[in-house]
Length: 526
Image 1: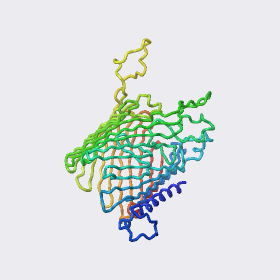
Image 2 (image 1 turned 120 degrees about the horizontal axis):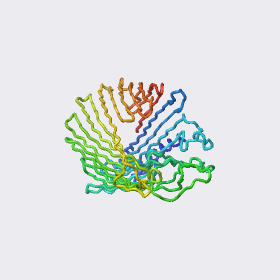
Image 3 (image 1 turned 30 degrees about the horizontal axis):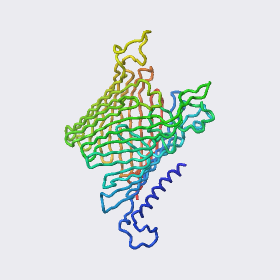
Image 4 (image 1 turned 90 degrees about the horizontal axis):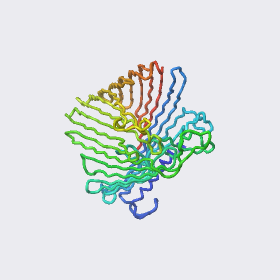
């Protein structure tokens, strides 16, 4: 299956490349037929590229008694293809362009038991687990500079990245860039969801466990919390600035619908079949804005927010200010507010959330071209969005009003980090230290690492570190961990590397743990 899918992408890219070689021939003559002197623009080859990354991991997680709890034999491989200049006119640099891009991912775990995928083995079944899933990360045709540079489009599986976060859908996007320093973007299609062909659940909203329930018909009461998946229509749009080199702002809106049946209860009932509801309903509806500006001699600023229209709560607010105090020193301050929000089908949408407020100070100093030093201080405070007790009344029976929660105290934590790196020819030496403190536990440690390339081909890597943690909520769980990683690699050619590394960690809680990894990265171009 994997081989067929990877071959399919290569065939598509080859077909597009071959077909576009004759797209500009106005005669429409088939290849091999005589049609006079060839057009000079058709002699220019297309730009095509094939890239692949493969990583293999072998490790086991064991309990302090030595029993193997988790065995992993993972193989993650991606195959990407790109074909450029499908609609190119080299005599006009402002002419429209069409590009095809696609990337497949195979993320297998052969360490998992086959019983974990068998519906008949209810004692071992892990719903939604697959030992060899394949997903299409992206695959789309993109056009730019159509209608005198006003319009661009994408068609296929694609990413959207803005103030609302990373998101992926299958559909179409049209973007119109006006001559008045702004652009309008609209898109629509189906949200990428796990359990559907060549899809992953990475881009769904949190709070719902969804997947393919085919085969569960024999026992509908089996894992009712594992919700059946269905298509999720989505629409969105954005208004953003265009033409400014020092300022960019983007206002964005997105709405996604749930469809199909959903179980009302997450627990099996011995008396009746699980109740379900059906129909089109909201999954998420959010709006956000982000602005980014910079002046080369002064500094930069970033700010934005994301508002959840379904729960009517601010989900995220962020701001960052960078000051270029000199050519070698940059000082920064950051603020982030984050409140968890969930899919509208999730019961977690009706519970109180615990927002986080993060404040950070950063500094980056590069005294010489070889030496770089950075560090920072940070603090986090947890709170509950509740009202003061004096504002709320009491019911006649003396109980607090419904939906009232006592005001929580601010629960702070803090931390610091310091890092440095020194470049040596085709390599570098570095060190980093981190400390986090909180009333429920602390963590402090340091890593020293280095990398060196010999004769432009042979790669040597090493890292060692000591880390201590103290879990104040569980007595006896504090420990000091010592670990090291050794790696060796060979550069086959440009952007292509074979690398193997070995990791060994030891502490009194987990004992001895080992991991071996093999990385293969290849990039091919015509």
